[in-house]
Amino acid sequence: MGTILIVDDIPDNIKLLLFELEDDGYRVITATNGREGVDSAIENDPELILLDLHMPVLNGIEALKELKAHSKTHDTPVIIISANDDIEDIIKALDLGAHDYVSKPLVYPVLAARIRSALRIQEQKHALATANDELIRLATQDPLTGINNRRSFFDLSEREISRAERLNLPSCALMMDIDHFKRLNDNYGHNVGDNALIHVTETIQHCIRPSDIFGRYGGEEFVLCCPDTNLSVATSIGERIRHSVEHTPYQHEQTPITITLSIGIALWMPHTHGFEETLKDADTALYAAKRKGRNCCHTYSDNSLSA
Ligand SMILES: Nc1nc2c(ncn2[C@@H]2O[C@H](COP(=O)(O)OP(=O)(O)OP(=O)(O)O)[C@@H](O)[C@H]2O)c(=O)[nH]1
Image (spheres, protein in one colour):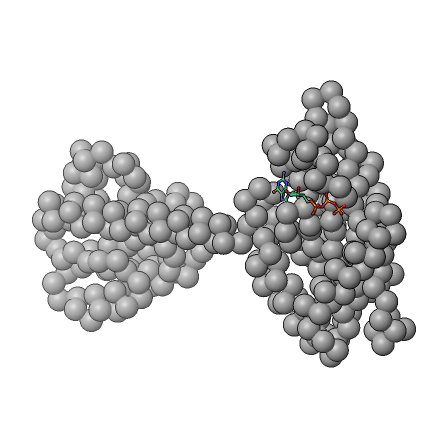
């Protein structure tokens, strides 16, 4: 059972309700004017608020406005307790976001049913929000490594590139592919391969800035978008990643397994072409790095951009 905050300036009203609600198993906290009520709601985070309309210091409508404007309480259901002739105020309160209202004299079983209904709806809202978060996570995260999947990488990097275009800033793409990963799978099994992918992900994460967009592009291929970054900085980022992966072996039981990366780097300049083109350039550079013998970085050179 949750906590209910009663805000009412008449002690006898509070006493009556408190007795009934506690009897139903709720924890009850109380306040005797709107000001106290808002402060108590922010401090105690109740599941529901019973708010009287006519009160000194801050009346019910003013208190409701404050509750709906505060990040800690804007989602807390509020049931207004009103007199029968409060029609205008009841309409105002519902328009301001009150969940429901009950008229005095209170009929407790009706109020109790409305409280249960409000709490049920609140619970469903939370469950929906959690399910929504989970859907977003599934749609954007690579399930093995937890980093951006390809689609999320594209979405986030497109957003950054639009910003870079507006601010006239260069950006870079790095394509990174584990060398001879098939051998690792063949020698140690697919599960060890999976754990090695997680290990490489974590090693790369230690080398990048929070503003960089990191994603898993495919099986053993990773991609990085570095906004506001020129080619010489991107080359040092690439070299830092390459060096770190090579010198942070994956520990399989007693055996350290050295993993290396080949990295292709390409520059994107504002007002030239889309970032997808730069990703293709980085991919071309990656294959040049593979041809050069692997475990190295190669920079795509297009004189019109890098000159
Ligand atoms: N364990 C594991 N292996 C994967 C995953 N995705 C792709 N792979 C494997 O990665 C390997 C990639 O092999 P190749 O494309 O031949 O490349 P490579 O062996 O890394 O060789 P080079 O890229 O040329 O250095 C294949 O054996 C895939 O099965 C995954 O999620 N987990």
